[in-house]
Image 1 (cartoon, rainbow, N blue to C red):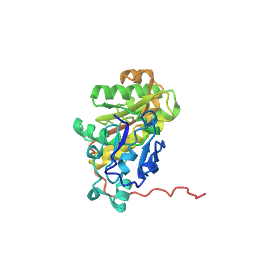
Image 2: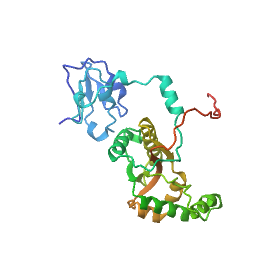
Image 3: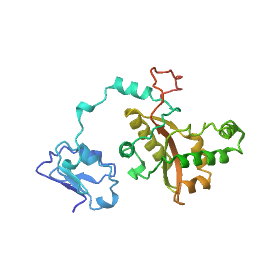
Image 4: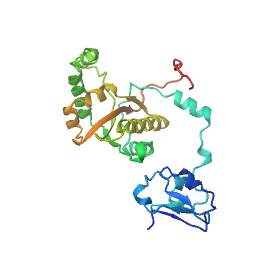
Length: 263
């Protein structure tokens, strides 16, 4: 089976697939039909741009054709004003109901988050969803122990000693992302995955909060890595607390204007 095949009876010779391929695997032939590079299978990053841009469904990529790739539904397009409100309404939720998010919904969120961009479309992100209450408590405890040597974090450590969780905010669940230690920019790839998860969660009425204290400790703590059964070759790159929000938010607080210049 050819890595990229083109049905010449459907191709309209518009050259969109040629223009869109980031690896330059397609070129125009003498008859103006696209010609596939002989080493396409080795160099293709499987981004799917060629398949997505073809208006006639003439192209098949690694056995996947137009019938296997859902068409965009114009009815689901988000108006700019709706998108702006949705993004401005994102809140860091620190109070959660004592109710677990159903696993099927969590899987759906991660299934959406896997479409986040990654360098060279490597898709290096691995996911762990922590929902065992004993493990959640252990992770808070290990985080507090890891942070106790740094004066800045002492208020959080002292609060935990009093039984107040300011580290994971008594969240019912935690989603953790990890990837191989050696990569071009896996930290960014993992952050983008979590950002997509966060926004997908918001669309379903869930609340999230970036677990910065936990992440800071986890990247230095062998005990936390062991508790999460991280592979030795992997590094934890980020985490989000999540769950059903205890309180609704009704307004859009202002943010300071960002420094900006055009060069």
